[in-house]
Amino acid sequence: MSQGLPTTSYALLGLLTFGDELTGYELKQRADSTLRFYWVSPAMSQVYTELARLSDHGLVSAEQEPGGPTRYRITPAGRRDLTRWLADEPIDFPALKHPVALRLLLGHLMEPAAVEAMLEGYLGDLDRRRQDLQRVHDGLEATRGDPQDPFRFPRLVADWGLEYYAGERRMVRELLRRLRNAAP
Amino acid sequence: MSQGLPTTSYALLGLLTFGDELTGYELKQRADSTLRFYWVSPAMSQVYTELARLSDHGLVSAEQEPGGPTRYRITPAGRRDLTRWLADEPIDFPALKHPVALRLLLGHLMEPAAVEAMLEGYLGDLDRRRQDLQRVHDGLEATRGDPQDPFRFPRLVADWGLEYYAGERRMVRELLRRLRNAAP
DNA sequence: ACAGCCATGTAACTCGTTACATGATTAC
DNA sequence: GTAATCATGTAACGAGTTACATGGCTGT
Image 1 (cartoon, chains in turn yellow, red, orange, blue):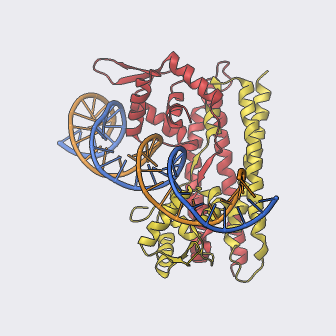
Image 2 (image 1 turned 90 degrees about the vertical axis):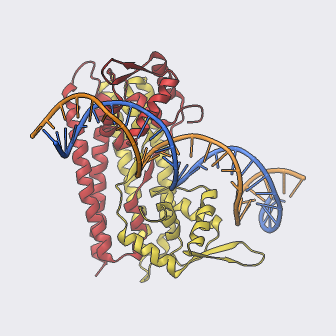
Image 3 (image 1 turned 120 degrees about the vertical axis):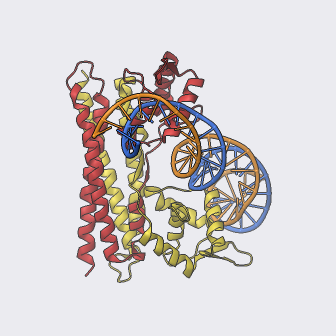
């Protein structure tokens, strides 16, 4: 980050590079269907705050159509800043906050059955999450093979996420197996 | 969280349940070798802040040995609160902040060579991270097979993390393959 | 008529970070 | 002697959240 806007700002700005102009509300929806899986889902209130800031910096333009909502579009300056950010900014290692792993670390303070129940609950959550992402992924399939395919990279990232969920599922099952083998 | 301390507080408290008493400094080291991989590495200053808060709540006791540093130990109340937290508190789905995936999502704004370089850089970072965790894991091997093995769960979590890094590595290699197949 | 979605924002607050400050002890 | 590690804290700030407030429009 160092000299500039927070990452979430650039992330939201990036969501405006897919050829359309969005309202704050729509931008939040797009964040919920993409950013959510690899970054964060900013709160509605933060989306508006960020849009105001991006607008102050001239990175997006706000077009108020009379009688309608305000639509935001990335400006040439915004595009310039974003590509510069992508090219120059150092990239942090991914940060994971994993409440299940954290609790498993403290498994000696839990009933064995509670540990198993927790992991099984997590399997269910994972499956729901995976389905959400699968739907997003399917929605990106439309443009596949297109010469100017705008969703090529989002689709790659979605594949990555799906693979991550699959791996997580395999490993949690393996952990359950190990716990059951050792318990009795 | 709802009614109580933030998760990081309980996480640090949890690190005091492995049978020893630690200084703030040592607690930070333990966090760096465990929490870092699944949760966060709180800053030194935050470790002291949390210890003060835990102490205020009577969840740890501070023992000041004259001429030496202050050592913190979990109290019975702390153990009670922590096990209650583990049993009752709802468990959030893991939150991932993945700067590499975020940038790949915006791959259409980068040079193809820059995208590949980014992923290769990430492979290197992953490998260094994996080695760090491997060393931590090896340090936990000592007590394997022990009847009262205190590190059984930390070892399971470390295995989980190592598997995650391995999966991530596989998938990034696959992404590089796909990018190269499509580029020319 | 009422629910649910679309649309926008402010205010208070929490978590956690960096910067700053200090000083003792240990290793080379 | 001087660098690294051990040890402890305060202060300022930033990022992001929840709670609150408001109001139109749409479907049943």
